[in-house]
Length: 345
Image (cartoon, rainbow, N blue to C red; front, side):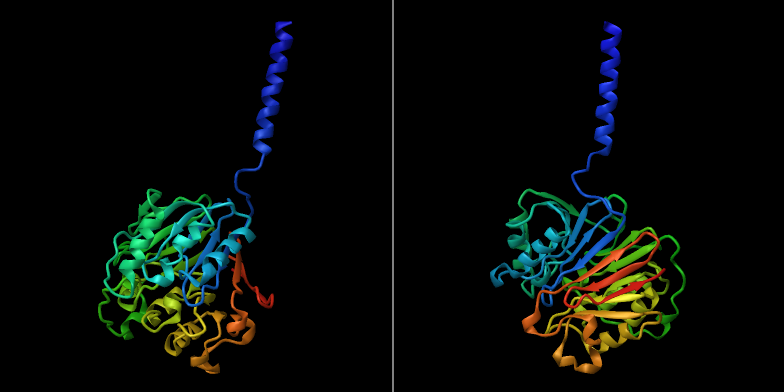
């Protein structure tokens, strides 16, 4: 009788163990990395969903406007099948990047906040943005990231390259070669604004590589690629600083050698003709995508309509979705018209 009971108990334990192994995790898994470039109209907000189901949100767009940007981010989170954001990374404290935090937290739970530490600027509402951010996050878990810090997202390698004006000093694996584009590069003046303090990072998923430098400015960009390219080449480039000419040096963009680039510009912000041309002419670039058409830049410095998410003020809110695979291939889809382009490794 006791042997039979013991055998039944053992079978029960095995059954429970098998059920636990087959049960879904608290987040859904897939074999794809998904990236949503959300339209916050000249601000920045990018949602990354790892194959494990863990999430990283970069910046939160503008405040106010009846919660416009917070609503758009919350909708992207819902479309991605997420219940919360695991990590929220704030690149810097300008209003178009950090301003939406209080409104977003009314809609979505965030596990951990990542930033570069104290505000380093007294202009452009940065002190106000920083104060509102600190008040909104309260006693939530906060990480002040330094260059070299890795965000612990299962299945991804997300490494901070620049933060608070500092940068990595050793090349990433496979990088470190001399950068021939540096010889003809202008020496740009030092920038002491919050832009120069931006958190910048590289994300690796297998053979796929993506970089986001926030609003990092030209003199800080060069620290990463001159005289040697500490980053190496990438697949997808988020055009820095909304496509402004204070960023996006030729030495950086050409050395990164991206296959595709996405510009988070607004209808009247970003998309500088100089920066647009640098990215557009980068060797190896197959496509440049823009979140908005910029009227002030004219047809010569806007991409074809099919590669623009929002053509005018009446069509705001459309986004780009990237699906990346570990072999390095990825696709970009325009939510406005379902135009899709696939890039092979």
